[in-house]
Length: 108
Image 1 (spheres, rainbow, N blue to C red):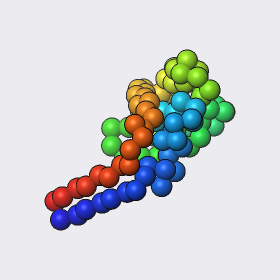
Image 2 (spheres, helix red, strand yellow):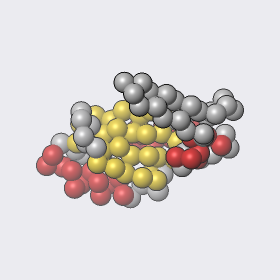
Image 3 (cartoon, rainbow, N blue to C red):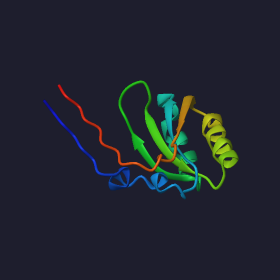
Image 4 (cartoon, rainbow, N blue to C red):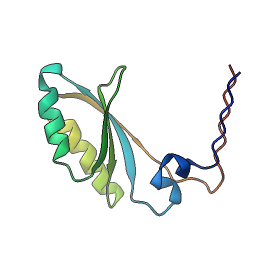
């Protein structure tokens, strides 16, 4: 049995949980292998990008993007999708917390 308890998502550095942060999203990106360098260079030029990680699975990268308004966030995700070499991009917008503590529990 494994039990995990986290007092607050802010503990993990999730600024969006304060409720006053700019709109943020995690964008999972599938990249054509021959275009990986160009995609990462294009992403590096985007001021809205706050983090980029290489991941395993169906996608190759996950980008954390932040924008001033939801419309700006939508445009940023569209710009990522339009980069040469991006085969697929899927965004998950981070929602503000409902004002209660987060206490996940996993039991194996």
